Image 1 (cartoon, rainbow over the protein chains, first blue to last red):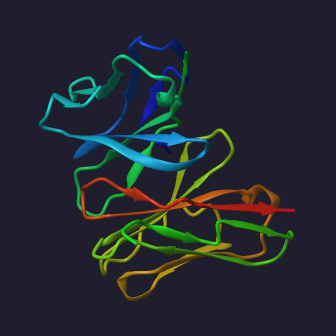
Image 2 (tube, helix red, strand yellow):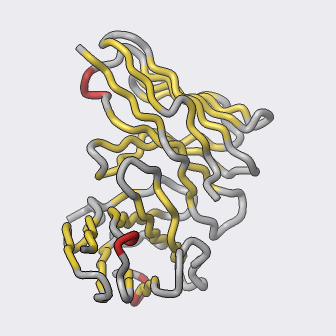
Image 3 (cartoon, rainbow over the protein chains, first blue to last red):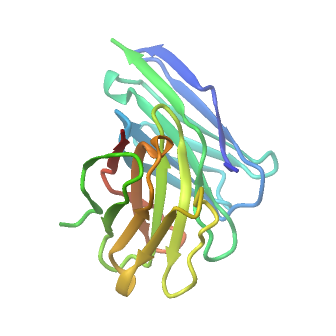
Length: 112
Length: 112
């Protein structure tokens, strides 16, 4: 079964607004990663946050991790039309040799 | 090329035929993954290779699906006696252990 569950399933905002997506997971993790996918192909890695980290930034992206609540959030600030895509969280378990498991994703639409 | 490559990019086949999908990972990456994504859905984990360890086949949906990784590099996903429900985009990714995954562009399989 899938580990991560993103919320909301779909999000529509205007350019310049901030977009927040949440991810919940069920078991212990080594790290949590966020990916973006355009047009049903080509997943691109955005950011990785390890279980001992609480917040990480990369450009307009801010990711938080709360291991006590088993949840993460991805914030995209000052959104652009080009940010329109599906966003997936993925978790990797603490043991070596475990696969990265993806959630079902949040579809973000940014209109100009 | 520095990225993950997959071939073919598109494959149309008739129900009942066998298909082989190929993945060339990034050189030096010890881990290789296969996922399947149906239209508008998240990524479904299929199989995971890590170094010389036995692969994690827990995601393969039926015994019609199999995969090999020769010489710790190129991988082939084989689907025997294809069914219409096998139609999807098949994505391959590689990584060094615990780190971000790099995805190939995928193979879009259509079973008529």
